[in-house]
Amino acid sequence: MDATLPDYDRKTLTPGIVHIGLGNFHRAHMAVYLDDLFATGESRDWAILGAGVRAPDAAMRAALKAQDCLSTIITLDPAGKSARRVGAMIDFLPVEADNKSLIAAMARPEIRIVSLTVTEGGYFINPATGQFDPTDPAILADAKDPKTTAFGAIVAALKARRAADIPPFTVMSCDNLPGNGHVTQAAVVGLARLSDPALADWIAAHVAFPNGMVDRITPATGPRERALAEVFGLNDPVPVTCEPFRQWVLEDNFPQGRPALEKVGVTFTPHVHAYEMMKIRILNGGHATIAYPGGLMGVEYVHQAMAHPLILGFLNKVETEEIIPYVPPVPDTVIPDYYKLIVQRFSNPEIADTERRLCLDGSNRQPKFIVPSIRDALAAGGSITGLALVSALWCRYCAGTQDDGTEIPPNDPNWDMLQPMALSARVKPQLWLDGLRTVYGEVADDPRFSASFATALRQLWDQGTAATLTAYING
Image 1 (spheres, rainbow, N blue to C red):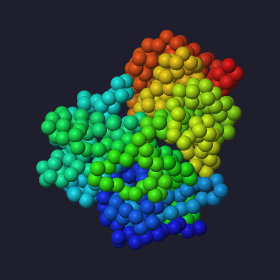
Image 2: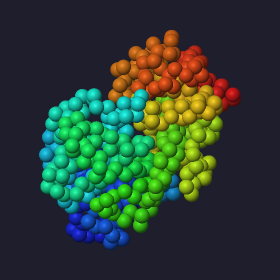
Image 3: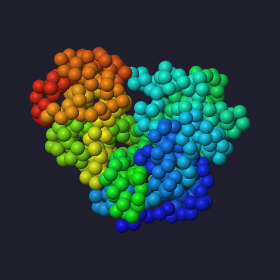
Image 4: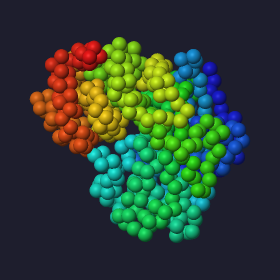
């Protein structure tokens, strides 16, 4: 088998976008849409300059520069795998502690969009309030000399453009966050306000931050993925595997112009929030629902979890009774059909996505993907038994052992705090809720939720995951 090459002359491309965060998702999503668009002969002045702001990004830069910035994208369709080389990125900027090259590139007039995939936890949000946290140490450092975080570099570049009378670029988040445009604006404006209030006012008035919803399952790269690239004749240390499905929904808010992405399947709509809530509640909430039962019962892969009758039964009941009833209507979408598609996507055996990946970083994911559904169900007087069990499963997982006693290696940036808290919660469940106000907010004080959480957590410790799931499914 051979990989397909870009169906256009890459020498005709000129940069219009700087993208910060060249992980697997960006290369399988935004870069693929642009690659498709360039192949039609359209928008070839919108090629990507890659960038990173963390020291580990230098390794990705070295790997991609060694192959002329081409990314290998392997689509894992059960009907047959295929591979392509995506050429939408034409350079990767040096990764530097002071982001000098990145700031200079973003200040160039031809750069009209700066896009980001810096993970859900990379926006300096206080989980309890959902607002930008100006007290984070990295933000405080950038307030003195804005240049080290992605947002510090963006603020520095916007300041340079304003001084040179160059119109500002649009800042486009491609991360999986509710209201990602608003969140990004809060981070950029909030950081600027700490050092230069006038600049902050200018950014708030003149810089566009479109909201967007992004979706494609892209597992982490390891030996399996590198071996698969070799099947297609490619010696690539950083190939990307992904599912066939992809979706991108965007607000059309790009004052300095944008690529004609609607010609390759991107949906432009003022109703991004509706698509976004559906995806975050049903897909991401579904991932969180199946993650921890599998993690506790020693299930390695997501498709194996979906084939487990207890995990699938748990997912179906939580989704249909406690999540989907509170998802508002979405244009041109039948929500039960969307859920059926999610089940099909999770069940794809070719993806080999791991339960451990889904369990990662619950302290950032739970407040975004699970707690809002709990809050809505409580407000409506609906059942929260299953959602409380999802939260209890996370707590039980953070205690650091599977049901059979196998050790669970640390799997959260806050693991050192979470593990002792989870062990203490075995005796007094409310300690978990009280200790994680940044995750639960006012939900921690709701007597219905705290009672359901305590019952579920005690049952998990006393009877194990399988028996607890069985009891919930059987009502």
